Structures are given as C-alpha cells and as structure tokens.
Image 1 (cartoon, rainbow, N blue to C red):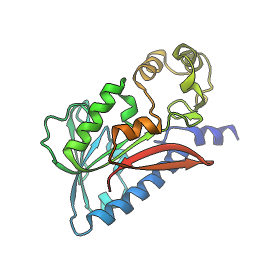
Image 2: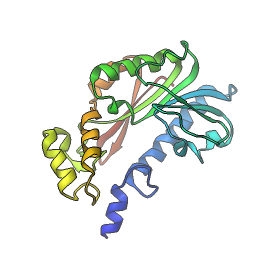
Image 3: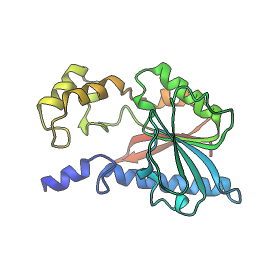
Length: 223
C-alpha cells in the first residue's frame, strides 16, 4: 500500500504518478488544439522552453513528424531523436530569436522556477514575442498540495520550516532531500495564482486543470 502511495505521489516523470496522468491529459488537450489550429500547415516549428527530450518521445505529434521542436535550456542537451534539437539559452532573454521565429512556444512547469516576478514577466514577454502561438503551463499556487514536494500547504509556510521538513523528515514522497537541492528549490520556486498568471498573459485563454473540484494548474494559450 505504501509503495503504491509513493508511486502515486512521485514526480511527473514517473509513469505511474498522478502528475504523469495529468501530464498525459494535458498533452491530449494540447494535441487537439494543435490539430485544430495548424491543420494543413505541418510540420510546425516549436520552441519548448525548459523542455527535455524524454517529455516528447512517444508523443503522436512528434512521431508523425508534425512538430519540429527546439528544446531550450541553460545548457545544450545531446539529442538524437528525429524532430528534436537542442540549444542553450535563457528563458528571460531569447534575443537569439527574431520576433515570430516559431509557430508555437511551449513550456511545461518552468515559469515558476525563475526566482522573481520580474523574471516571470520577462519570460512571458519573450514567449509571446518569438511565438506566433503559445501554450504555457504552471501549477496553481493555491492548490492544496505543493507539486514539487508533494506536501500540503507548505507554499504558505516560512521557507525555513519547509527546509526542515524536506531535509529532516521523509514526508516528501518518502524521501529526505539533499540540503543543497532543497535550498535550490526553495530559492528558485515562485508559484503563481490565477490572477498573477492572467496578468502575465493578458490576451490568453486560461485552461484550468482540475482535481477533486480544485484547480491544480493553469495553462495560458492563444490556440
């Protein structure tokens, strides 16, 4: 029973986790929007800010060669998958790309990792500038479970309390965190609520991802 619970609460990179199930549902919604908006125009150029190759491997749109995806991270990632390439860059400064360089800018759970509201604003402006369309997702600050730690309500705690819980107990997915990793996450994560997210993307439609009647995450898009 405990092992099943740990699997359910594991990172969304783990296929049996709750986060992975939500990711699959989100990607299905994304695929529907892409098919509807870009029918007859494939392949389209996509910039995935903070994306990894394993996120896309096995996805129908990539397998069908409907997407040509550029993965952007702080360091270039070795990629040997048709339809995927990788570049080094900064989400808050995409000056290597002219306006409208991509048919679509995609980002999944990245904008909350940028330390400050100023950096989040910069990323939002850059995503809208370089992409003709965009699909940007982030967790909801007011969802009861903080998604990075799988702990309830710790987003409202002083960071010193959360650091203690992460490094001195096994309450976070049954594991103790390395202190350096815990501090890094506590420093960089700034969760957004719906009002803040809408302010970053004022012209976007906001798609609410629900769990038990509560909004777990938001996606801003203009598809």
